[in-house]
Figure 1: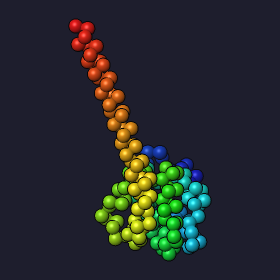
Figure 2 (figure 1 turned 30 degrees about the vertical axis):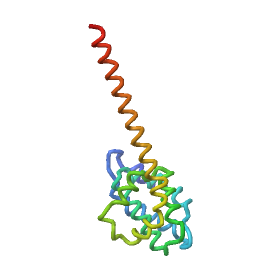
Figure 3 (figure 1 turned 90 degrees about the vertical axis):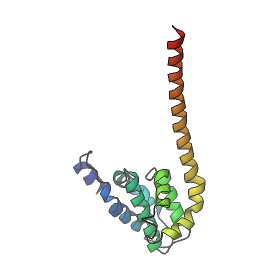
Figure 4 (figure 1 turned 180 degrees about the horizontal axis):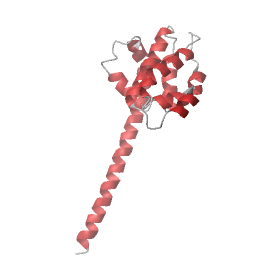
Length: 161
């Protein structure tokens, strides 16, 4: 399926609307054994997931599909956290998307979201939030460096008069 989608879709065509369907199917397959999550399934379909989750909104759709599949599987202990960690470490879902999902009021009543939030609260505060802070700090450092170059240029212009 991935090869067909990749070969037949123009790179300029946005196929992120497929995210709920594709990720929902992958995560259901990952929870075939209702007592745990099979992360090898996620790894196997990672290129396809990556293809359909190019935006923060489509990544949020993937998170909703993930917690929905976990909820449907009977909420196996530790499985939703393991799945979320895999999605983040594989760069299939960004830290920004996880935080947006957490704060999103439209998905507040989605099946399993409240239970998932309780199970991943530590993950969000210990892993996701710090990675966002590091990301923003790096952006601030880049801004400061850019400002220093402007100051250096201004100094040279004013000093050469």
